[in-house]
Picture 1 (cartoon, rainbow, N blue to C red):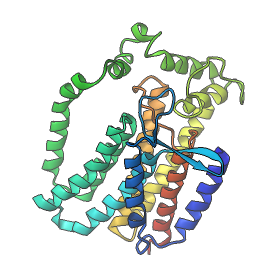
Picture 2 (picture 1 turned 90 degrees about the vertical axis):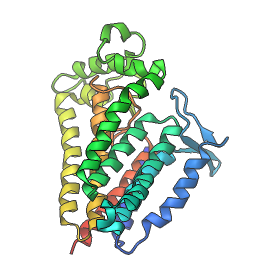
Picture 3 (picture 1 turned 30 degrees about the vertical axis):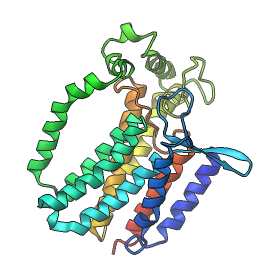
Length: 320
């Protein structure tokens, strides 16, 4: 299944890259369908994957089989496209209260929808992406500082409203021994497995004796460190860094402000997910259920990332 999604993703990226992003209304084609899919997760059609605490999937019957799709993955790409267009459209009016208020509502609504699904990890990623787009889009620096101050002031309130299980995900980073057998067991096994890989790893498909949960998605970096060692993990980080550098260069060469913002948003999305995912595996970040871009198992994540890459390729192709 992952191989089929990879092939479909590559074909999607090639097709999308052949279309001029400046005249192809991807934001219009995606916005309403994605919003409807998100709303369906709050109906009986919504599905909670065993082992998770969020209801952010849809079970779709197709060709006699049941397929799971995660609308929030497509929403993250969609909000980058729509918000980039919105920022470009209002231009210098971004510094006026009314246009800025509409822009903030546009940015916050997707975050709230993902948060209401219970998917805190993707909500955090989406929040970082839209906040960065607003910042590089030109909102007044004083407003940005005010938002940061309000966010920091809200931390104690949010902490009090968090469940004990979610609080423990943070506490286990500092009280390792206390949570080793409970909330911190995944990260404890992850760090041990990565350490066992040493320089060159234990060998392809030779790891996994620790029975670590979610090795194929949330802890795929653990697999790279265990089976391919420090060298393999470094190569993986190098590949992701190369993608980020290419997106950065494409953003600088974009012929339009919208193209610049789209590439910037994609760069922040991939970088944020990579940092959180690798941080989870190394016990530097709490477990938030974030996939490692292009490496973790998951058709929804892979297809939407390739969709984003295809649009970035279009930005590069039509840079003149």
